[in-house]
Length: 336
Image: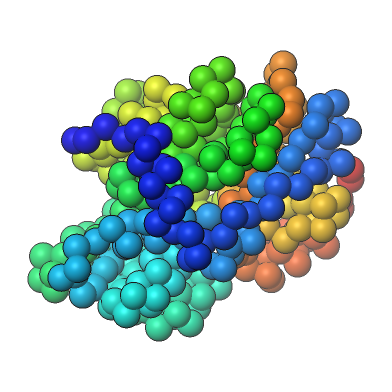
């Protein structure tokens, strides 16, 4: 297993130039006032597919051998859209495997890119099994959502952009799922600025990477519907890269509730005029719930994507109940 280095991230930056974009870093006056220190938003939702995942998927696909004619992946939505987008650019077949928990809006977004979609089972593990079958029987190449060195290096380019623009950053809040984003940012950020503080944030229901870091090895969790659906799924029993990177380089882990994510989506909408998905809002949720102590600024939040079901978003900003399987997030009007 080759060791990932800063040079891999720098090469990825060159490889994806022209496919992904260098996204804006903007101030959040409201969060700055709430925290008493400067807070900046890294708007990965400005990527052509509406999410950061394009960076890693493009780097992985652009590094495939020339003889490859098709790719597949297991996805909660955004990675699948990224793989479909990058594959289409190269004229490759793309088959995206997802569980029944993936929101319809994300499924339709992938179909719009002319990719094949397979809905398999009710978990990421079920969808991954279909990917494995496609690799064995159809000869497709599986592009991991997180545990792939090229994917991780691609996501790490976010850290290069952050520290190029603001080398004075002291803290970065990173949504935590399978660890490709957090691991890539951590790899590059710590190489550039070893004392920077990195905080991984995820929902408190079905947080696989959080539990795996605590256990010291991959842990199975029960997947349940969440406002932060893009952070769902396991990390794989044979995880080779992302668990190690997150375990070594992430300084702190924070869990946020569905109610806190709900309020964070409202905050982004009413205070910063940003439509974002729940997985993007977990950093805001952590800040506004006072779960982060002794924060040093400037602080950057990675706003990872905008691909939320707009019916659900409408319910949240209007303060209505949201039903997540057998769990109900009680509606509440926005309060700053």
